[in-house]
Length: 484
Image (cartoon, rainbow, N blue to C red; front, side):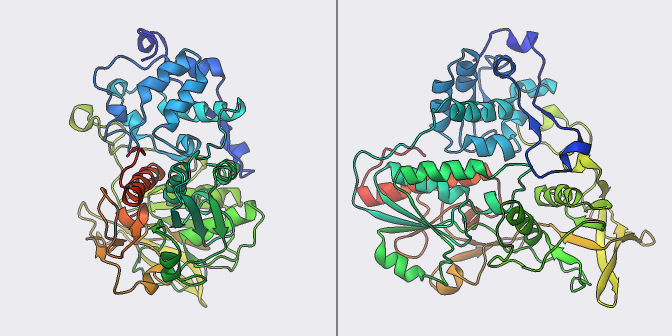
């Protein structure tokens, strides 16, 4: 723990943002870092709460030892803090930026709406560790002679690759896009996480012996069967990328798009890459001087909102079929679990109009071009209420209602009939494997991340990648020292 009386003496503070009027003029991160002293004061607020729910299964999927590194930061021991943090999380600079922080929801001080600023401290530890040179390649001292292929370089694939490389295996990562990172790089906007952080980790992993093969679409450019023949193990971390079917009439109008092609394109522009992309639309999608409607209430929808404002949209409206949540949750009913309450993202705070308990009936247009979105209010069962229809002017509309599984034109197509799949109640198709050994129905073929569990958080992908690495190491060597 930090200072014994810290939570009584120090108010909760988190990093501030640049004003919305300034930050929408660029795609860089806009968080204003706190000083080391300010971060240490926030770490000092971590109390002796007895049972720290923050790093249990309700708070942190990777089981970060949050009270321990808060105490180390408070005592100015940044090197030990990053060592502790790395013992559970390969990439705290990622999660410190993009994780929604269920740990803070589970913090005992959240009973008083003043949780420890865990996410802020986590990011500060990682950034300070880079500044002081504590993050360096850690190559294996003994090599096993085993060879592992990893399909996909998102957070699950990268975490597994780093763990397996440090265990002494020869690791080859195959990435469809031109650079590593998966949807960390191409799905998350730069204003939430700049991509130099991914580049630094890739360089570290190369120094640890991991080989990256970018621009290789497994199942198309190289066959899965070839990887299985050439390697002792293959781990599939393809992510969940197929947009969920919306079933909204008028989807064929010019100006109506799924969210992910739009986000991928803009991330490629910022990265000065060609916007052509395997699996995504390549015609330019730009929101400048347009009225934009975003269908969906999640993180992807919010990312579309922030991107549209930065491209110069005139007006952005976000539609959410769910009722507007309460401003404050009932702590005694839901703590320490994630609560349903009114949350406003930084992108929504930049000027979005939010419509709750509204269904999208159809996209309307003229001469094949989108002109508006027809909506109506819905009841508590999400059924349309007659007589409440209205039309929102729209030149551009994005559908951001989630993902139903991996692309089916590469790995799944090649392994059709051999790989056991599962379709859940929402129609998502996932590769079947348990969270103990992560083995699929195909010999020597493991899977982890969103392709197994369905769309989820970056922190869950890191956890699955780490656990799958342990399972593979144990299968190849008979025993393992890698943590779960």
